[in-house]
Image (cartoon, rainbow, N blue to C red; front, side, top):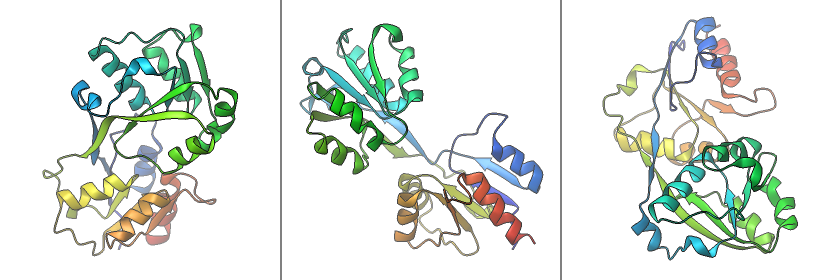
Length: 246
């Protein structure tokens, strides 16, 4: 079976995307559609978690979504974020995104390399702050484990949730391959298409947690990324297509 059409469970990329290059090179059709989206909680829902924004001297940001929803809720609650606030961000890209909301150069901002565990030296450097962790309703177990190991005074605040998008206008059977990047994407597939049977449809997943979620629901994973040979999803798919289409 040749791969002729692929559905990627993410928003459409920009013009320089490797997906578009691959589509041209391999003569395949690639469509993009987010299987999940983020919804913000309101200030009433935050208050039920007994969160008082005044109580914290530091904030730990793991994503751009976390930044947007923290400042949105601060505004809704008429909380003026003090200039003395310490920001610890998971990566430089996330730290730079803070400029959307604050005057960057005048603030106490630190960032890690890439993963949450990379932030451990920063927590050692600034152990005495009272930290708030704005998060989604889904949290990787690595995060509380790293924070507890650092003996920090920290509190999680769920400020947004990841929900399944409505995909009922899609004919899922029209695609030879479906590409997933999170367990929530797998959940959305089954929620939107309760009668989905994999059959000849190929499943591509990014990361071990997405792979586990797919296999737990009875899906057979055909393409896995990242690996040493194929560190990106497009590389993994391209390699698989070439083997299949031989």
